[in-house]
Image (cartoon, rainbow over all chains, first blue to last red; front, side, top):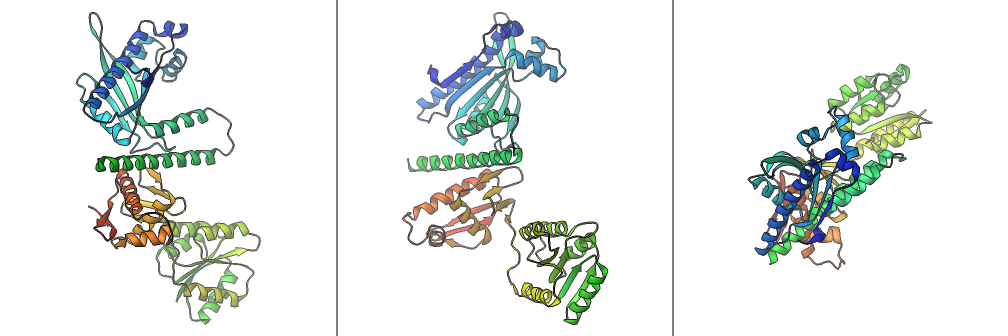
Length: 215
Length: 224
């Protein structure tokens, strides 16, 4: 396995283990299950003389702290049971694709996996959020084979290009800077950057299409 | 020539009506912004004279609403001497001229004559075609759900196409108008930019399409 392609960020600190208990392994499991599926299909595609559609994957398990906060906000019991049964994004994978077409290829491929169930999907690329955010969102339910039974676990996926990821990461950082003068100007400028980046992604795709035509 | 006069000071209004009529204009006088908007929307006038300080709806709002509804009738604003900000806003919102109070009747008549001489109507900042909008101010190409920012040259090409739908524009015309005569760019660059624009229109589910006429140029056509 090419290690560099995957970042799996799972806090193995005491608070996480105390809260998630044995379910921590389930959340880790669903991430590994999906990523190894992606990795296998990616490698097989390359053997068929196709370009690698995936640049990078980032995965994480929500910290115990913010999971508790999320449950409280939704008026749900603050237990690991409600986390596993009701919360879709305790495990979260972000897949970074090279070109726009790779995103839709990946989405279709995931829909065709017979054991994965698509619970929800939102195309924020064709329908960007008002702030300009773009990504393809999916919630998958994946069966994990345990010793004596099968446990279905949810995982959230965000599929986007590297350019979209660049914007999302920066916007995320700015959002937490509470006191910003000229909030409106900043929001407007970030939206402009998002629309610029979307335009550039389409140019990259166009150039790639031209190269493919020439070959 | 028909003129709509919106002025809430009765005496001033009466005097203006008398003088305008004396100069062979047909005049309808209204005394508040709501009526000014209703009358203005009828598109029956060659010029609208609009006071800014008016009851119900102020003149700037009337102006904005008329332009939003696509009414391009030339508009002359009447402003108080101190209201420089109003003049700037008004002109930017699509007013054609202004006159600050108090003014000489001769000047009002001259400005009305000048405005009716001007052929070109107020052109909006957004070009609409099919389900697509192109904003000339910030180069934004958008549909209802999404927007993209075009580069300078992409914008200029699409502007030419959208201002002349169904008309053939040759590769040379694009080259001369946008890249200039002495540009070092190769003619093939036009095809690259057309490809960018096609991809962008497609990504916005546009119902307009750039069609190529082999060896000649391109046209923008609506598709159903």
